[in-house]
Each structure stands twice: as structure tokens, then as C-alpha cells.
Image (cartoon, one colour):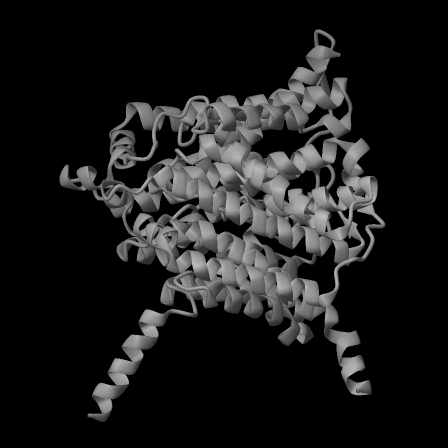
Length: 293
Length: 288
């Protein structure tokens, strides 16, 4: 029973982590609280749905299309809206408000195009087999979720720690001005970060769509709030923090539903969140950002 | 007279929400005026609404006392959360206050015995008269106008334009910001308390993320350089869906688009005295 719940918790936690990773990337590198990240997540799920249902393509193509489309959406938001604001040196608040507008447009655009009702991926898209390993029953969906999100996260961690691109990214996160002086094309880094973050968000959307089997225009909102909780728990702008925070939220939700009751689903995670806010508001693994004055 | 009564029967809800929304926009104006990016006002509104409703229903206190409780509890909550969080700067504070809003929602959901949990509170006596709302708005506007013109208001302006410079001038930055947060929470709580005694029912999801976004949008749309901005912004946001209600589907898209366009092209909001002055000068130059 416990092992069973652990598998559920890990797969849910992985999706939270994947989503929060994109959110924290934009936060850390672009210094924007991107409230449109939930809408990008939702858009990714719908793109996969259209690719699979209307174009009749297989699941992997749907996931690829979702990553690409959500990535382009993220990069487009950066290029069309955030970039002009940056050039004007607009205050942080204004950037955040702009992303609220984008989120409203996206969620309601999808509502007009697809209707407000729950949509689902076609049955039989994934084999419904249950694989039993040592008495633990694992569904194919859970294996897929864990595989996809862990490999994406490992890839991203490697890219950030081990490549030239990752060094440039970390430099920009540290100080855009100093990075520019070092010859890094900062605008291009912002653009590609937005693409990556959007793609991760869109992929999380597909995985949640498969997991909960329900796509609806406002599905991004609860996810966005979970993402905020994950990022605070883990530490704002911290990438390992997003992973740990995501897994923690997955575990606390699944285990409290299993052992306390569904009403307590968020109580433990948010109780801890409150404690973190009072004692260490920058998050458990957050480093920076006390005021300078 | 009959036509007046019909008018009131049709539009009273809208007119009352004009007043409540104006209060909410002013509540966030206070923090924005000193550059604090707090988006916890929906949560403060919720705390105020629940506190006031519970005072009226469980303790049977007079309406005025309930309203006082509706202001006191959010102010205390703001003090508790403000002390640690105010140290954070800019977007970090925004993120922390966003998370605080979720904490409040989850707490309200889980303390069922007191708050009714997800079912909400039903049967709140409808004690709020229309003039209560506008009297409250007038008092809040007057108090804020006095604050803006007093020493504190000038300190807020200084902090908003440059925190470091302000602190070098001997302004206690944290204390002023905390004051703005607490006062703003009290105003948001007042709006929540008045609203709860209008609507008969309150539930935890009314004070969530979308409400927080709604409050912020009103203030930014109107502009935060003066007190006219938030009132104008809240009026526009309240009336916009009414004007477009034939295409109700599109009205939210229009809301979002208006927000993006305002941010891109009128960064100081609709009501921007500095821009009006520029226009006047330009007009005068054209005539000369």
C-alpha cells in the first residue's frame, strides 16, 4: 500500500517539478513572475490533443508538438511583450501584470475555440496494462510520466551545469549587465530561456492531461499556484529547489489524501509553506534577494 | 420616481460593486504607492469577510463592531506576515504574497467547523446599506488623501522612486512599507466585510488567485500616481463586462488585451497627470 502510494507520489511530483522548473527558470533568469506559465502549460496540453485527435498522429508526435508549440508561445510572449518592456526598463510589477494579461487572453481564447468543458485524450492511446513489480502495480502512464520528466530534467541539469550555454545562462541570471560586458548575447539568452521554460511547461501540460485525463481552459491556474508553492518551498530561482519542492508537494498531496483524507490534501504542504514564509521567506534553498538598502 | 426604483432594482448590484471594487483598488494602491509589490489583498479581503461574518453570526455583535473586526483581523495578519516578508525585494515579495494568498485559502478550506470549509458561510444577514459602501469609500478616500499629502505620503513617494536614496534621507523604509501593507490590509478587509454583508454567502474560492489578479488589474489600469487612478480603473473594470455583455465570451479576452495594451503603451495607467500636462503643453505649443 505504501509502496503503491509512493509511485503515485513520485509521478505527480515529477510533473510538479517539471512545471516549476520552467517557472523558476524564467524567475531566475528574466526576473519575471511569469503568471502566464499556467496558460502556456494548458496550451501545450491542447496542442497535443489537436495533434493526436485531429491530425491522427501518435503520442510521441503530440508531445513533441506540445513542447515546440509551448516553447514558441513562451518565446513569443518574451519577444512581443516582455522585450519591449525590458528595453523601456519597466518596473518588475509591470512585467508581471503583462503576463496576467497574456494568461487571460490565452485561457479565454482556448475557451472560445474548444469550449469550457473537459476534453480528454482518446482511449487506448496508451496501453492500460498494469505492470506488477514485487507486488507494486504501476500503470504505463505513470512510467511514461516518470521517464519523460526525469530525462528532461536530467538533460536540463546537464545543459546548465556542463555546457557553454549553461554557463552563459548562469551568468545572465547572476547579472545581465555583467554578462553583456562578457560578450554574451543577453537578449538571445532571454529568448531561448523563455523557449525552454515554455516547452517544459507544455510538456507538463501533456503529462497532467494524460494523468488526470481532463483538459480544460483554466487547468493552468491550480497548476500555477502549485508552481508558486513549489518554488517557495524549494527556493526562488533555485533549480534543485524546484525538483525537491515538486517532489515534496507530490508526496504531501498523495500521502495526505491516502492517510488523512481528501480534505487535507493541501494542508500539510501549505502549512509548511506558511512556516517557510515566516521563517525563511526566500525559500528553503533560495539564496538571494534581500533588499539592498 | 418609479423609473428611479426600476433603475435601482436593475443596477443596484453593479453600483454597489463599483463601490466595493473602488475600495479594493485603493487598498492595493497603498502598497503600490511605496513600491511594494504585494498581491495578498484578496486574501486580506477574505480574512476580513470571514471575520466580520463570523462576528455577526456567531457572536451577534452590532454591524459596526463586525466591520471593525473585519478590518482588525486582516491588519493583524498583515503585521504577522509582513514582518518577515517585507525584507524581500520586488518580485520575491510578490511571489511570497501570492503564496500567502494560497495559504489563507487552504486554511479557510480546512477549518470547516468555523468557516464551513468548501461549503462556505451561508445566511449572512444583509446589513450593508448602499450608503454604507459609499460612506466607507468617502472616508477611505479622505484618509488616503490626507496620508498622501502628509509626511508619510512623501516618504512613500521617495521609497517608490529610490529605496536606497530614501533610506539615506533618514526614512525608515521597512516601517513605512509595513505601515502601507497593514493599512492596505485593513481597507481590503473593510471591503470584504461590507461585501459579505451584501451577498448573503461567502466561500473560500472567492478570495483566491483570480480575485488577487482582479484587484491588481484595477489599480494598474487606472494608474497609481494619484487617488483618481484606482477609482477610475475599478470603474472601468466593473463596467467593461456590462458594455460588452452581448459578446460575453469575448469580454474576458478584451480585458486581457486591454491590460497588455495599457502596460505596453500607457505604462502609468489611464489616469496619468504627467501625461495630461505634456498634452496641454503640446497643445499650447501647437496654438502658438
